[in-house]
Image (cartoon, rainbow, N blue to C red; front, top):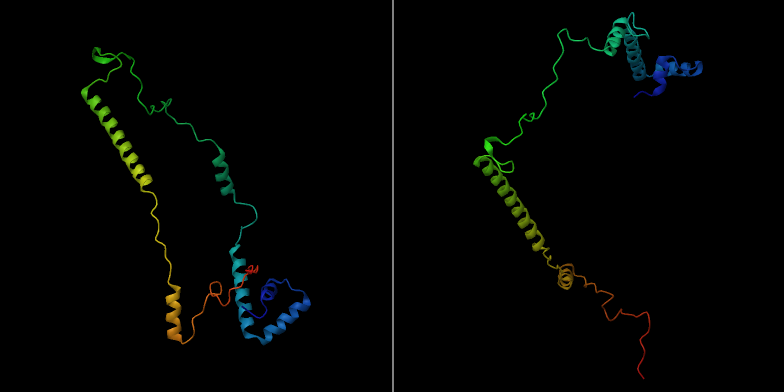
Length: 189
């Protein structure tokens, strides 16, 4: 970062008024770092101007406009005859809907069909049993009570007083010498 900050970029871009430009030029005459940064910025600005190149105007090129207009036109029709619609995803029902092999309509056809149905029923039953037992065990398990932790403050206070040589601190709420009541206790006659 230069001493001039953003004013250096404004100087290179020609955005400073006459008085500020004179002050910036005077600073550049004294400061080598700012002078080097100004040269870098001027070189960068010249390179950016060179990118504009010939024919780079505000309007897009004719080729680009032709391709853009081509996107809006519908695609050309195929040269071959009419296109068949795609086949449906599920099979078409047979023309003859009567049961095959003279069986009644309500029964499955072969023992293999019955086995498949039986397997499905057994699998669904087993899954239901598994989920039911798992859920019941979870609910029956309940929450286990965490053990109560009560540190032995008295023992720690004595140990601290022995190690540090200080007397143990007593609790003002339980120490009879500091116990005071907000309402005086009635005196006995």
